[in-house]
Length: 141
Image (cartoon, rainbow, N blue to C red; front, side, top):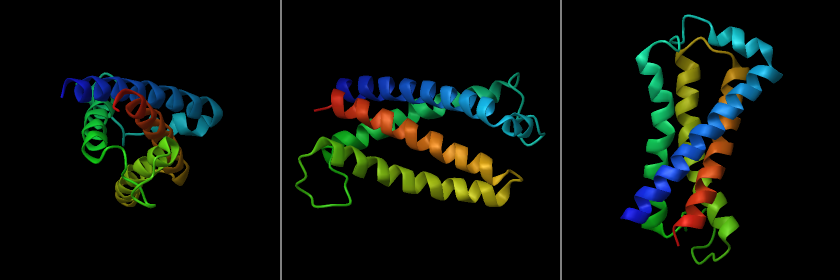
């Protein structure tokens, strides 16, 4: 249990850092996004509820660590006896990506945000999940 909690915390913190870096990169590469983040749709950084943006990746890390431990890292869209760690990581990440993209499509359908913002969120999420799952694969054996 301690191994799952520690690996989930490490993966979650890494995912939060990756998310912050991706967000900064997107805003530098695509200046129009920064303007969109200033819209009334988003809370200002001074709002205490914005701290949840850092808590969610850590909670995701715990959920992913628990799931990785439960399935032995073999949540895969291929044969069940896969020993290749890379295939296990990609299969595991794929499951979480599918669920997350569905949630993001709901967000896109409900809120006035650009398709570009949705795409940047999806790409950032894929990178975060890949990094987090790679950490889990190294820490939980």
